[in-house]
Image (tube, rainbow, N blue to C red; front, side):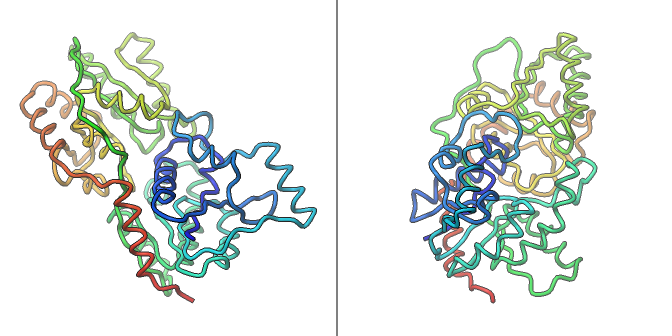
Length: 388
């Protein structure tokens, strides 16, 4: 039995990058073998298997609603407290291995030893990024405060699967800087993608459409993209800009204000917020190319999704995004400033042959599936020794 800790994702409808990874991985592992999703119940004060309502939340693939935070219903709270007071706390089955794919909370981290005790074999964590350490000024304060303890807690595992070489290096370097002794092995295992059945050509339109898929938050650098778009519109360049992503007012307030101002001025700027998977695929199909202006990523899922749909992407040449660019279909920039993005966008507008060549390179790439990803995790689990 493989145990899968989904304490957070089973209590949120958010579709952030990590939540999409957790949902896709949970579905694939359930198809490929005996898996039990579990969560830490703070009201029962213990670990247990997910109930039917939590499994339904985990299976949610529609548009995100509200906060990305975990929400517990009144029924869940009362049931957990009743079981705890009655001494009837639900136990989880013993596991042969454990995977923790989330950036787990302080409370969950404090109770990991109890979960570890129920697992006979190796315990594996998935590490996404150390963005809060690299860009603390663009990261929610609570995330920045949590990261040091979280990175130390990762050292309790028997192995850590980082989602990119850049993330793997960041974790190793932080452990070395803190002089951590006896750190577990870290292996870069790139994520998978949902299958796309066929490539769809962008429909004929009076103006090309540029797409950006990303949570609206500080480090995603929407402000630079919006400045670039405004400068091009002021210069008479005709195009539409479509933004998809959950807004975060804590670090994305400036970008959200700019979006409202541009829309009020009548600019061709479309902002949906979060959308369903079906509408996301349709947005990729309807654009000429995408722009991913993020300053730093652990993996860069929207870049891969854009390429998978045969749509070129403009993004950073550094870190995990530089890794995503290997293989073609990407116009990379060393600096993601407003002027640099404007020049790159104008270049693709004015050079259709280059745009077509990038699109052909994107269509020629091979992409990993979630089946590939889950299989590689399982292979490493079979090889990974359990540490004392």
